[in-house]
Image 1 (spheres, rainbow, N blue to C red):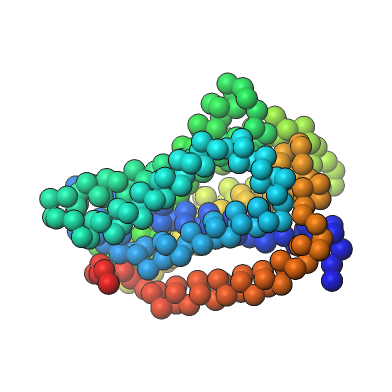
Image 2: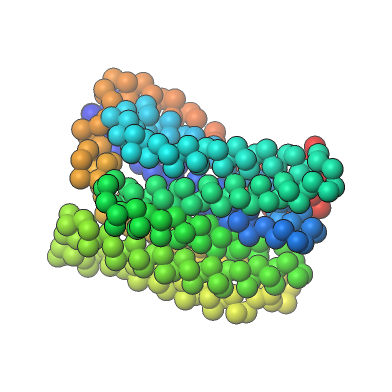
Length: 332
């Protein structure tokens, strides 16, 4: 049905789509976990309730992305996870901790609930930082140098701040009263940190990767791609301006910071994708070099055509059912 080169592009696009949705959807619920207050019982229950119907399903996109990488690009999968074995293990352990803490905080004795809140918070922070570390190592081309490790650690904190930012924007949209006011303050602070992180990655990436520099600053490509960082900067400014107006009468505009954060995440992702395409392992493997046999990809594509729309439909349906302000936390 498709030639080999086209199949590779289709599958890397599906994988990128899955990673982007994971970063947005699981990003905000990881952010809520990072921001979870340990001394405010009612607020912590409300925050958990705001992500309760969604957080587990959000991780489906991570499973899909890794599955597509393994099946469609086995050589890249082997290389990437060989380089990122330890942070991947930390990520999996932290996600398990989050799952256990989410259920046990409801079933534990009252005196132990605070402990499980701490576990949920730590699990969320470790998950975000491990993803940021992996992103940093990917951008640095998996170099085994002190500079690469330092940059990856800074990237870990940057991604944690970005998740906290989108998580705070989610809480502004989903909560009311004092918690919403607190979420506005969180969003203002983490928004600045997120902006600094985006600027840092945007500056370092072309400096350490000559190919990336050539792609971004080759004429006339620059003319078409430069609006992307300009739009990103404008959205950060717009978000901060909107945050100054919140909370507003009748909750007008409470959704705007979250939408701005989603678009910022999308623009940053497209910027990274443009920087490295067609490499799936920076400077080492292209999508065509690492793609599986065309016969295998053609067969798998039929499964993707069925599975991906089903996941999208379920996601849309769940958000439609549980839309609106958060209600009292219940476990079933």
